[in-house]
Length: 202
Image (cartoon, rainbow, N blue to C red; front, side, top):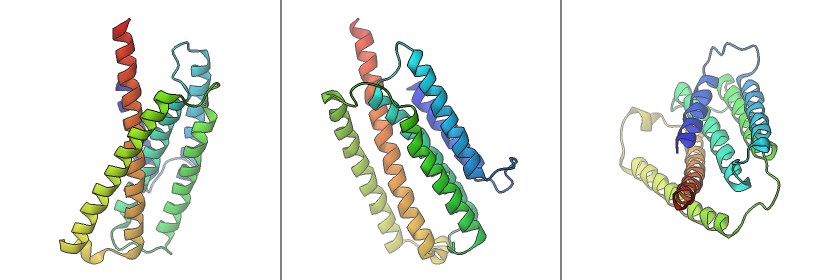
């Protein structure tokens, strides 16, 4: 669980830093983040290739998927917070956010491919873990949508009054990304639990 927490916090921090308006690196924040993400994935691939206790392919995918997804989510949430609820699509800030976020999303997809493992991609245990994770992912998405619908129907206040259609669409995207984070955390928790049980049985 410590490894999951470290990946989560480090990824969230990176996403927040990449969304800062005065980014101190002479590259687009999204491009800098993508290069860093792919470099980390490559380093992990080299490390796991030599480590006898390296995680198998499904766990690697879940770990890197969690890292990449949290970077994308934290960057998007921070950018939306800075833009405000009255967000309009055709503005410099919205265009910059979109370019950087899609660049990070592409890098997140490539991370899993870079650090892939040889051998079978999944067995019966992996499929069972994936099914459980998908169920939790589904529940989390339903709860988020339910809470959002109730807020839209019965809520009041300045934020709701200023909410634009563009911001509404972005929030729905965030709900989907959060459900993906829940999926990855569920998978990694199951692998960590199985590893503890195997160590206890020896």
